[in-house]
Image 1: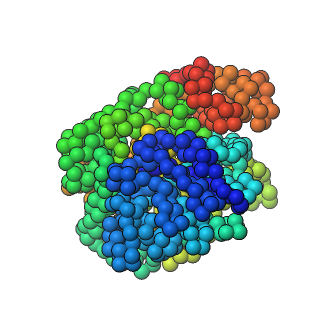
Image 2: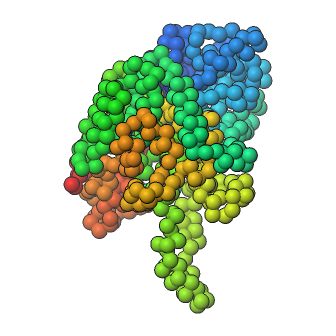
Image 3: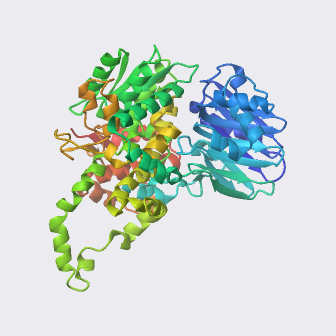
Amino acid sequence: MCGIAGILVASGTADVELVRRMVQVQRHRGPDALGAIVAGGRLAISHARLSIVDLSEAGNQPYESDGHALVYNGEIYNHLTLRPELERLGARFRGSSDTATLFEALRLLGVEATLQRIRGMFAFAYYNAGSQHLYLCRDRLGIKPLHYVRRGSTLYFASEVKAIAAATSVAIDPVRALFSIASVADDSLDRTAFRNVRQVPPGAFLVVDPEHDQRLQHYYTPIEDFDEAYYRELDGTSEPEMVRRFSQQMETSVRAMLMSDARLGAFVSGGIDSSLIAAVARKHTNDLPLFTSNVLGPQSEVEDARVLARAIDAPLHESAFTGNDFLVNWARATWHYEYPIVRHTNAVPFAVVAGLARASGVKVVLTGEGADELFLGYPKLLTRRFDSIARGPVDALLSAYGQVPGLREHLWPSPTDQPDGFINLVVQDYQRQRLRDAAMPKLAFLGKSAAAEHYLTLQMLQESLHSLLHRNDRMGMLNSIEARFPFLDEELVRFGINLPVKFKIHWSRRFHNYKHPFLEDKWLVRAAARDLLPTRLVTKRKNGFPLPGYRELRLAPQFFYGGFIADALSLSRATFDYVTANVQPMFVARLGAVELFGRLFESGWTVDNATDHVRAHTAIQN
């Protein structure tokens, strides 16, 4: 896992010292080695290495041979199985790293064929000396980041926006930043919170030709994995056989992701997803330290993590976290997050526990993200089955008002017809609507109701998962920690996309969760865990990493005086006096997240300056 950066100029020679400065800014992503070269004259690329596979200098980057060049961030889990074929084609491997395999695959098979063959997580820049094309490529689900912007005739790209800002001017997009208070900014597959700075979308690559023309090309979208024949096959499978198939796939995925020459551990919350991964991994390794965040207080889940550690006989390292720890680390986490931290306030304790893992000598961790999206583990996805009952009185009232022309629309206008609703959708680039339009025709054979429920997996993979992967990458790499995701193995994703809902949501005679009392979420995951984990963990309901967050935060008006929001909206001090005294504290705290982001990235404040500001004007109310 690493940090990459580069510039491509239309004419002349690219500045190698500039890309050295770019990669130095993201040195936290790769503290083990730095490298920079000029390839083909017009391209300069740089790399900060976190050495995990082949710890020797042979694994250092950039890679270059016969004018071809590569900088790469990620892991290719099937790289060893690709080597025999590449050797028959004349591959010349430099060392045993997956980087060496990827380079030879790109050189011998080409970019598009390679993207269809490799399994893993990645973001890379590859220069083909023959065609003089530059390719910026990102993995199927967007696990690893890759940003770019064009300034005049120069293209800049890097793992993080702050690296681009070290080479050219970068400004916040105030509309996207302000609308992040609605928890939508970090959902975007291709936008950022910075004006004109884009991401290569998941499952896509940007190609720039010798004339400097660029085009974006998609090679994968999750809806392509849906196959009616596969769905029908799974639908006809018995429950015991389904549990066996899923367990086998989990074993295969976890074993592949144990690939490491550096020490590996696991992040655990005490929940079913991370516990299952740790239990499977423990069968295949004698050294598996566990790491958990103990958010002190009644919401602590640390005892469940302790139960897991005892059950699989693995050491547990606990990171205690208090409200004051949130204040101390809020600015630092925001600097690395590169968005206002609104949706995932648990990014802050996540960063702290990643630091504990690094201090313990671990570089790689297995994590449980992806299970909730693939197997419908979010309570809101189950409670929607009761929506028609809960909404009955409201629907009757709306129907009655609908008898009077114009009255219903006057009293209950559609959110999408209102200015704030429209802007919210624009900020999201209508992603959900466009996905639904593409997906529903393929699911139509299921019938309207079943298709709508099956579609939820695709929606969650696009929205919820993308922001979670961003959180894990940034908060892990802040401490030079690589996170791996066994639930997101390519074959497991295809399996989950096609799996009928009846294997995800089960009716239960047992009171499972007050939010959905007789519905069991992630049934297949829980069924597969029964032989590996204590019943307490198998039946545990989802808590979502609870912590003292923005509901408990109290911001003084001075937090906003003369800051980013005041400047962007021309607001007076009197406005902030009123807002902090009268508006819901959680909303004020979200506004504070935007303010903190603005002061760091627009006003040029250091993390230390911002942390002092937080501590002076913010308090936790218990």
